[in-house]
Image (cartoon, rainbow, N blue to C red; front, top):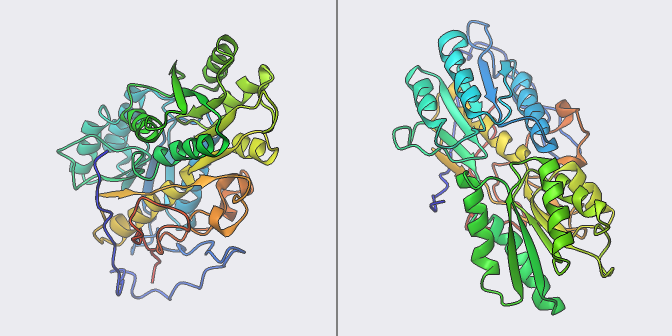
Length: 392
């Protein structure tokens, strides 16, 4: 991924044209983390009293990571008073394209928030939506397009600078400290996705420089927990020297269950322990970290990405303000030592599995205004610059 400067949305005075005659919005309720629960009240309603319509097109809803992404996006949009529609393409790029085509022809929402199944195939239809007057905000992926550059806003991560390289550094630091040679299994998602190629490069930019780490790569798991579990079981049985595991994404659930099935999901200190550090945060990963059986994971979760994407939609689609064409959100490494500390928070809140599952209306709006949380790298210490818009 090219290094892209994160632009700052500087706001001095915001006036929502057409709503100046309404009473000021009430001060939002604050949560125990000092974050607002609903600063968006009334923001999703037009001057004529009709709600904005915002559509969501997720990648698929087959894992905990994506279920919670869908839940928080819907909750944030509905808190504003806007209407919401969504469709699960189940990792079928053509179905996702057809959904956007239908939105353009029939529903014509004010905006589409999307996690594309394919960064290349979805580009033309996103450009078509933009040409039809529908704003498009992409999260989790880059959209590979030149025509739409500067029009379609993307919110993702730079996996080679403040992403998978951080996980790679965790493995390197462990090897150097322990003196143990790491025979790592790299569990691929999909080689056809640029995102996975970036995660691969980010990891290897660090571990390939360490003579104490040897990497064996898997076939594609296709983001399937079942396939991931089978690949892990087969690899660690056939190659008993394997003692470390890195997963591209999809959460660590499948890999964790694979280790458990062959008796390798055991605490550090046990000769059968596998040093595990994944990119993704998900519920099962956090449960097993708490149990002391895996070692670390990255703060790649949907919550911060979706939170920023929704904010940008409100800033531009509702308020008509310019927004960055590209925002990279860095991550950090979570361990048992920092998960419940201030350093373990992401933009002011704990990682999402610490939140009440299924009760997304109780999740606060993150503080992306102040930018990088303590311990994060990759943004040169600059503010992320995505403030929280309100009706006022």
